[in-house]
Length: 192
Image 1 (cartoon, rainbow, N blue to C red):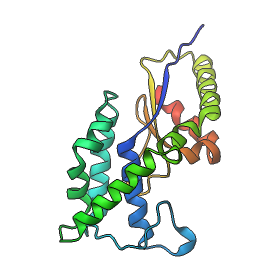
Image 2: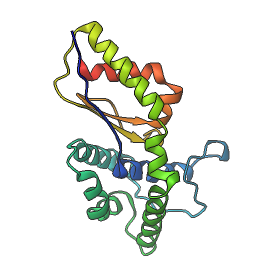
Image 3: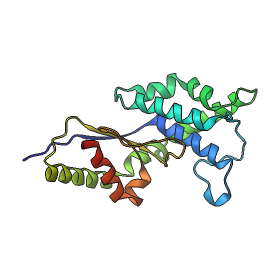
Image 4: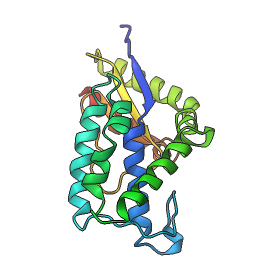
């Protein structure tokens, strides 16, 4: 029985921007041994209820990204205010801080060290993952009903739930290298 699996792997600018913001927030309250990219010595004024606001925003953005219709770029560029309003305190300096963070992310993302590196970093392992999933589908005699979409993020999402759902997954690049077996098992659940 031939199994045909269409697997689309891409990077999400909007979800990666949320990871960028998450890490800035976490770094403000961490010791030096546990810092994450990007590091900023400038204190950013986030909302007091950032944890609940972040989860809500992650869910909204993730749902839009999962539509796979180009909404990801639209959210990042045309709904820039959404990130600011949900996560940043409304005071005199916070808009300036937000704009600096936004521009810093944009410059990094558009460089070879940013978005391109995120996408290309899993090329070989992405092929192995595809073969492992096809093997699983053949063993279980499962015929995929639609393409599997995998959205790459450069770091773990620690402030929201980035679980796998039916034919849609948000995966940190590190999982390909450090948690490959768990990743395969997690993605198998997309088909069950």
